[in-house]
Length: 308
Ligand SMILES: [Zn+2]
Image (cartoon, rainbow, N blue to C red; front, side):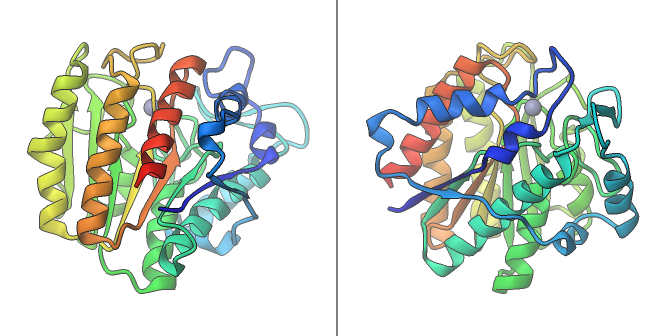
């Protein structure tokens, strides 16, 4: 099993206001834990800039231009109460898209079985026409469309275990039966969407969890909702919106998962990728705001991806 890992120094230059949880130190914490020799076999690749035109796979041209116009020449510009941009944010966002699309290319051309992308800014809150929730563009949605357009994939599944509902991904694929969107998330919690009865064209599977749910109910949500939906859908590619803010140490939520729960979910999705997708699995970092919880969770996730 070849596992690729994408990152790039530009991701550290997307700056947020002092005290903001979505900060460059998140990627430094991931880089530190990956120095351990158990990760020696990881195929580490530096990301390259994405093609700006691929943003249009998930967002209209006016939205691309709106975000571009909000990038400041200096300092930090507020896009909304939670979301901001700094001078290098455009390049970081394009590099995040570039890595996600390259990861898709890698699993379709056989350069890797699975890939983890440690990029910032994250993407799953970015709706078609709105940047929000620390996200500028929807990296997972763009990568899913890229798989369809560049590799002829028919059915893409996006599984989102970030503790927040991926309202952006749901918005983009709401009426598109070629993309299955499955999410576990804490409810009630930001952004407020993700109720069970939000089902789109039958392609949206929301499995909300109450605060303090813990690993057992998280696994049950996978076993009773998400894994059966994947088996019915038979995806050509599985994309994980891999947020690690459901970890018990995380300051933004109370689902109280442990890193072993992320390893378990990883193994289950690898099993489905083996069954339906020729092992093709692309995992994109979303949230995760306690540095230790994030690093331990990414280590468990990547360790499992590498084990095959
Ligand atoms: Zn989150």
